[in-house]
Each structure stands twice: as structure tokens, then as C-alpha cells.
Length: 349
Image 1 (cartoon, rainbow, N blue to C red):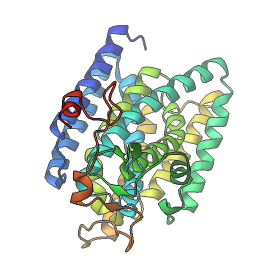
Image 2 (cartoon, rainbow, N blue to C red):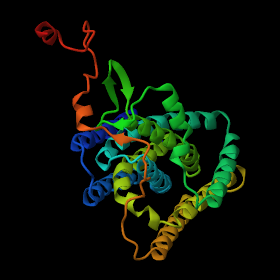
Image 3 (cartoon, rainbow, N blue to C red):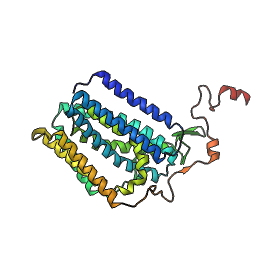
Image 4 (cartoon, rainbow, N blue to C red):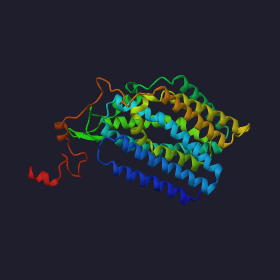
């Protein structure tokens, strides 16, 4: 697939533009309603599907189907990521109006890290094709492990990332609005919101280790791998606010995701020297697995209503008081000012 340089710039430019639009639209902290989340989810899905249609029109059915297979894999694996976010936010009792800010910067970081992973994976595969056997074995093992641990959930309280962060980064024990950093007593401190952002980022990196090899099983075109990842990730924030209160209903989704990983692992192992499974068949199998797991989940949990994930009785962090917020010092000191006050204010003292 011969993609001109201008098309790369156009896609990256569009992504940056939409991130800017999203940031402006949510510049003020507020609770994202289900209706707003559904609207944004629809927008991102339309963009993702429309781009796939453009690829299909410009480069033919085979590449179009490869894009849609990769997009579907990334989108489905992202749902599991969304459920992990819900557990993290509920454990740390992150106020709902501040969660979008964490996810926005988390998604930006995810795009950067996944871009690096994709570039590295493509270079490794190009120089050593036998690595695909390792990728296939890893996907099969990951699918098997996910199937065995389908009823288990992470415990954010035992997070090594949080322990390392608290050990090496001075931080306060209270959320201070949307701030990631504050200055107190002349010292620059991280807030719990920054700690949660780091945990979310590390979690996505762990998920990327599974998802990047999976998408290379359906296409080895770097442009398709990157764009399928990007358009799937861009809708994660809206998907979270749409599905976070419904995680208890998707009881068989993890089983479906495990089977998808096993399937793409088998496909990758066979395509090296044995048999290339046609893309339409791969796409049909992935779609069928996901559809059955989702429909079976909704049928098994029929009648259950939306409810927020449980919050611990004693959350590890608290909200800052109004007095603490009023006593905050300027975050960045001006040059030549030791106490953080502007020169005019100092002359009036």
C-alpha cells in the first residue's frame, strides 16, 4: 500500500485538530452525561468508519477490510481498557467532573506511545520475520491467560506504579480541582490526579503490548496499523463515560476478547509459512465472536440498571477544602522573584 507523505500529514493534522476541538469543548470541568458521551461516541465511530470507507475507495477492498479488521480488534480490546479505568477511578474516588481531563491526556500519551510501538514493531518484523512466531505465541498465551483470569480484576491499591510514584514524587493527599501540580510552602507537589494519570498511562502501555501484535496479525501495513489504532483510541473517552456504569453487564466480554486474541494468534502463526486466512474470513470471525459475547452478556444481565462502580469506604485520597484551595500559591514562580510574587506586589509590601 503506497501512501503519499501528504496523507500521513493530513491524518496527523486531523487528529490534532479533533483533539483541540475536544479540549476546547471540555475546557470547563463538568460531569459528562450519558447523552453527551453517546453523541461524542457516535462522532468518533463515524470518523473511524468513514476513514475506512476512504481507504476502501482509494486502495481497494483488501486494504479496506484489513483496516476494518484492525479497527474492530483495537476497538474491542479498548473496551476492556475502559473497564479497568472505571475500576481505577472508583478506587481512588476521582470526582467525575475531573475524569475527562485525566482521560484526555491519557489518550494523548497513548497515541504517542502506540505510535512508537508500531514503528518499532514494523522495523523488527521487516528485519526479522521470525519474530512473528513470537508474536503469535504471545497472543495465544495472552488469550489463554485472559480466559483463565476472566473473572479477576486489578487491585489499584496494590499498584506498583502508585508505590513508585509516591516514593519518588512529592505529592499531596488531596485532589485540588483539575490541577495536576500545586505549590505549597514553596514546594512543587503532584496531586493525586497526576498519580491517577500516570497509572492510566502505564495501564494503556500494558494493553498496547497485547493489541499491537494483534493488529499486525491482520495487516502488516504501518499506515493501516497506525490509523486503526488512532481512530479506535480517539473515541475511548466518550466510550468510557458511555459504558462505565454498565461494566457489570458485560459478563462474557472478556471471554470474547480472549477468543479474539487466540484467533488472531492462530492466523498470525499460519500466515507465515502455512496458509494465509483471507481477510474477509478473519473479519467475519472477529465480528461473530464479539457480537455473540456482547449479546450473551446483555441477555444474561437483562434487567440490571446503570450504577456507578463501588467506591471504597475510605478512599486513599480526599478533596481539598475551600480554604486549602484559597491558600494555594502561584504554580510557576516569575524570574527574579523568590517568593512567587510579581515585582509590583513586592513593592507594595
